[in-house]
Amino acid sequence: MFKLKIYGEVSMNIPISKPYFDDEDKKGILEPLESGWVVQGPKVNAFEKKIVDFTKSKFAIATSNCTTALHLGLVALGIQRGDKVIVPSFTYVASANAIEYIGATPIFCDIDLKTFNIDIQQLIKIIEEQKDIKAIMPINLFGLCTDMIKIMEIAKKYNLKIIEDSACGFDSWIKDKHSGTFGDCGCFSFHPRKAITTGEGGMLITDREEIALRVKMLRDHGAGKSDLQRHNDKNGFLLPNFDVLGYNYRMTDLQGALGNSQMDKAQDIMQKRRSIAKRYDSALSGIEQLILPSAPKGYIHGYQSYVCIFGGKESLKSHNIQIIDSISEKRNLFMRELSNKGIATRQGSHAVHTLGYYKNKYHIAEKDYLQSYKADRLSVSLPLYPQMTEMELEYVIKTIKEIL
Ligand SMILES: Cc1ncc(COP(=O)(O)O)c(C=O)c1O
Image 1 (cartoon, rainbow, N blue to C red):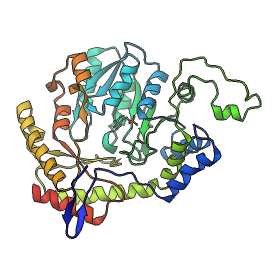
Image 2 (image 1 turned 90 degrees about the vertical axis):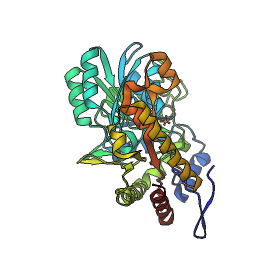
Image 3 (image 1 turned 180 degrees about the vertical axis):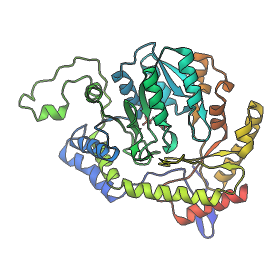
Image 4 (image 1 turned 30 degrees about the horizontal axis):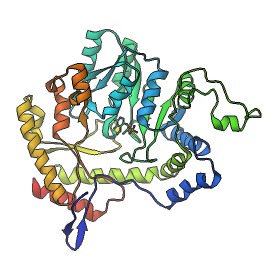
């Protein structure tokens, strides 16, 4: 864990993030224990409705986590063994793994370092060169939407399916359209590192009824009816049909209960997250070695994470792996110094094409997706959680300024 440091009279021990729970969460989670309905039932139903209302999507289907939502989304879109799906090479490994689960092939695409999201020009190039791409999985990383307007134009032109990985995209918007609502479907994570959490948990949203019905079936072993539907049915003593190969990707009602109480305070949580991000923006903007996150005009950043690029302009310019690696060593030193002062940071995410499984299976070199490599080696995520105190925030800002 983190070393304790003294700031004035107070020990500083600042984590990278902290889930925000209150008495309502504690009360809510007890209700399924009292009713005895603990697996995908009324609480999950209510949580799904809240997500529908919040995102203004037509359907929301809860799953055990975002990875399983992505898996089911791909299956529901008809992606099959051998199909090619484009995915950014800078994301969390789960995005590409979901594609691998069905025997499809992830085709990596580099990112734009300014947004950490897919590089649209390279995306078009790949589609034109390969000609047999079936789908794109854009990632709305760290709470910033990909340019989904362009992506949807591309999807239309080349007849491609779109599954948005919005694991980090809760309360992220382009104008008044929520992340995950642009493509055929979008998937969210409620892991504790996300803005709202159910412990583990995921959700797929879609406006297309056939996708919603299929995902509902697939998450529940392929059952033609959910347990809740069966329970309310006069022939509920009979098991339903199982016409497709399904999975057990259900969310529990304990998680559903937590999802409901988290949604009830989501506006407050998000307002606090955004005000901390704003403080970082104004306090750190003069530091040349840090490039701060930003959002294009009309985009509303959700700040699932506040991720900077270490090394300033030199990092943006550099195309040389040795130079990137030497800046990376300085970044690691910076993170270690912060850690020694009781402040946790993390690299933003990883370049999936450099991870053993993908590198070895697809024979990819680090330099093949250079911006992703840079994002991996040079990104620094700063502490951000709604209950962060003024003193903690000041301490982080002051310590960063002292070190840099
Ligand atoms: C971009 C991205 N996709 C997918 C996932 C997987 O989410 P989960 O842990 O809910 O399966 C994550 C989790 O951090 C993520 O960041």
